[in-house]
Length: 413
Image 1: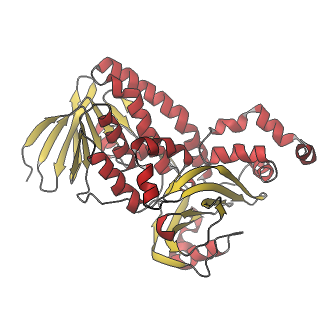
Image 2: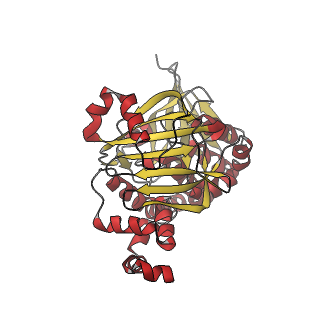
Image 3: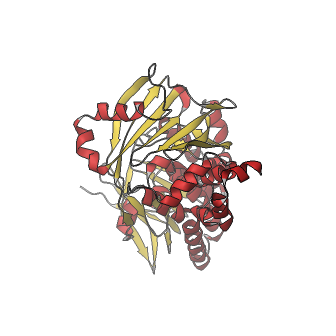
């Protein structure tokens, strides 16, 4: 039986206390806002299971701003660098910059604790969004319900959906996602004892961009490594008939793949069979989305956590100073939406195209092959694949000209 609805006023209500939600809540509170941080899972140590656990270098400034970097280093989280293999020449890498390799078992509770301990944040575990409050031409808050059926109405200046790919906030507010098909599926597991490829003592996260399969090696704390195998959808019945054999066969057949002879798998193989590419309008009056609720894409590239950190910080920086003025806030939300689109949508579209499992184009083959012998091409390709630069960088005339220069001339240069 549903109880009566109490009414509370906050400056911000954030639905979803994972990476994007905790980041937004903490940074909004540090700007002086009163924040309701709403999380449907009652356990404060809950964490996301189906995740590749890679954090790209673009997230480091946000992680440092949150005060999270020192906690990760103290916990033994490794700094990682990127290395890519394709059938069109082999390896190229980006050793100059460092990301992070951290399990969600470690990251989620750490970040949730940082947010909950920030003055101005009220963490509400065990509450789910069940409705939105409508104001005049805008969203004015959210109605939430606990597991006993008690309801509360949270009136806000800004409601933030940080509740994932299937966002309840988006559904309740009538914000539909634009879905692009995904013709691959994934299986992954933790391993211990996998030798790492090191640069200055730091391990590489490694991607094999096969055609059409793929794989990834993501090192984490405590000597753990996540090994991911991705298959085209037309192999679904075959793989599901013997998951363990199919998973290990792909990994053991990788060119210059992870050495698994002395490694031990820790825990079961986890599957992610449906991974639609979804993007939504990042903002409407009184409403904004961050993380997977705004944009969810192919997990092979390990962008989910990084985009969550970045989008939440971007939202706070655009809007925090405008919360006392509706017109100024709506202008700031439009600016957030524009900048979000410019930063993330080109990457999303590129990754969504890759997820169709179609053969790579002739131009892409040329670029990937040249990246193995030309440091400038490798740097550009690596920065795009690590999501430090827009894919539009690949259309730069200088880059195209570089591809056309014969190798012997480039080597002389």
